[in-house]
Length: 288
Image 1 (cartoon, helix red, strand yellow):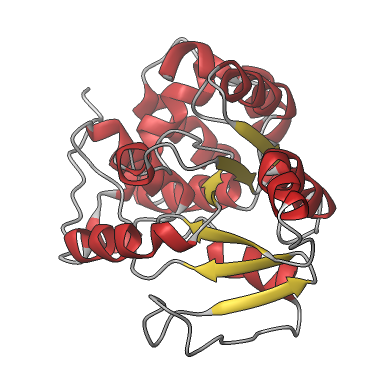
Image 2 (cartoon, helix red, strand yellow):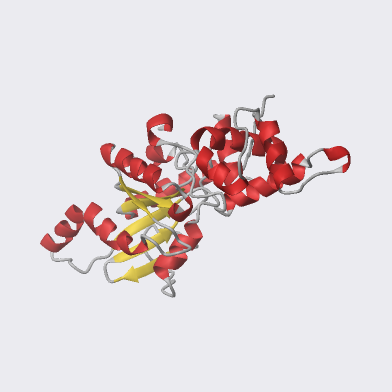
């Protein structure tokens, strides 16, 4: 039984966001991109590299506490091999966030040395924070900035409404002037964002989505499925595996059939809340 579905999302803000980001780039020293460590590829906008050009770029793999640590380490190596510094962080627990300021200063070491040579050692570094919806951009900014929310106005080229945050005497953050959106040319992007809850369930068939998730988990994380739901026949098709799980949880309706819709909702909730385990759905060696 085929489980793929074509999930689409057509916001109209993308062109405007790209224009605003390009307008502000001359004032920015580096770009910090927030991604979801569980779906590191699908939670990026592939056009960002073209938008920011040669500007120094840091990737923050957020929600790392919910992702497979070994796979996160692979992604960090992958980015390093491609000249990009990546850091695993978790805005909920605060994990890794203490590394952010030092990472910025390391990436912008030459800029700091230039300022020092020019007699401007107190000049702050400016980092723009970008990310598609639901990756935790606001949580990251709130965690790093704390109560130091400071709108800086009357600066050349800084349009009204841009949110600046003074972090310390050496660093300022700019919240993205506009919203980047994912691109769904590859249907697995929409699917993976739906797994994590970034695309709301009301626009998709939850049973098909749960079945597709089970196909991946049965292949990549069979031990975690067994630990959570007991012995399962993973050689069966995904609908049957979903039925097996539903039966084990007592989700049986009249006639002895499994309430697969209820089982699907339960499976997705348990994946999203990390009850099944720390899982990454995209691997650097396969997807990048």
